[in-house]
Length: 161
Image (cartoon, rainbow, N blue to C red; front, side):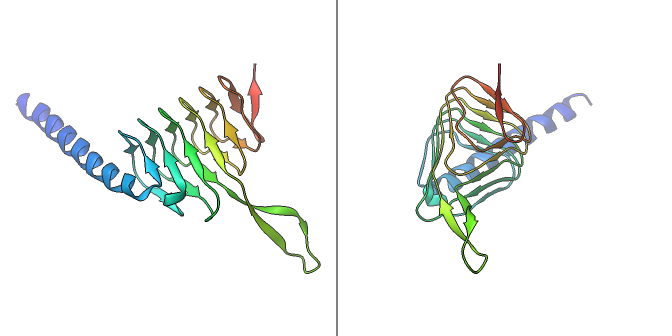
């Protein structure tokens, strides 16, 4: 009897890994460029995927959302881990309103360098560069550039010493 549960676990792992490999390979074709070993755990919502460039060995967890405009890009380096519920957006509105109370749409690129980890539910806003090896805490709202090898947490995200 102990052989049967072990066999089921082994079969599930093989099926799950094969399913993820096929799904990840299919999705990687949609992006502007994509390195090897992209892992997608669950749903990924991406507007204008051809404007997103992803490096090697990157991971997206459940429920990540990527918004880009037609004239902005998101560049993601190698070995980047993006946790569940993260939002990356290159689209925003100006602070000032016109005479009719409307705001203009603006777009700025996002760059995420190598070996970055973005925590659950973080939001990365337009025009941000996250430096190599940085860690973004869960629920942080990144409004400004984050230096390399730092930890940033809070709303707005601030580096910790």
